[in-house]
Length: 313
Image 1 (tube, helix red, strand yellow):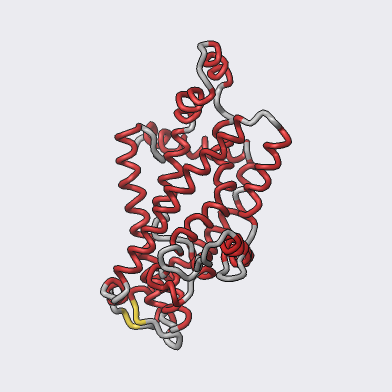
Image 2 (tube, one colour):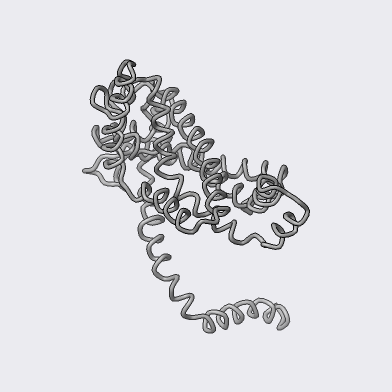
């Protein structure tokens, strides 16, 4: 290797170190998140090998017998596999199709609102449910929709109707799950879209108003197209978690009466992995979910990039 090639190879390293020294305080701030992810996110990946082993706590992670894809086959050929996949995917897609449009509508409404007090009140009330745990949310849902003494049922009975079973009815339960999730997370998800709306050039709206465009036309032809890349990014990221239908929510809301329509992959893993101590099987399902999510993100990213020229990469 001659001197010229050596200079070419070492130049980027010198530039890197100069950049680090110049912005040392910024790089120092990265130490905490890097250590966090290294220890709590990437470190446990080593123990993920038990998905391919007949894990026994006595033998440990490294001493357990290697069984290959046996745990994956056990899950895929399980009697409940089809039902679990159906419920998980349907709930995830339903939440995506309901929550994202509602979040966009809420963000646009807050952005267009000219009454500062009203905007702040609505914004606060919309954000608040996100900070409540599903234990509290379940209590609120019981107060509202419990059969017999729920507020909604009291209104129905006072109007001459019959009391409805909202939380243990297999036909109504999926609707309750999707709507309660939208209620809880809609305001928080709207923050991303509000931030994107703040970056729109105000002169575009001024020019549209001069041309006689109505408020609806300004939203449709300026606001929505301007935040389209953000919408695409949010949808793609949510597609990557399509097999995560919300364990905390489902664990609090479901009951044996609605297992058929409420049982998802995460609740099944909870029963199999923690209650029946099948840790290897639970780990295998986690890897299965991760691989499926990665494939969905990559495929959908390429498809969206060809259709809209907006993507994650």
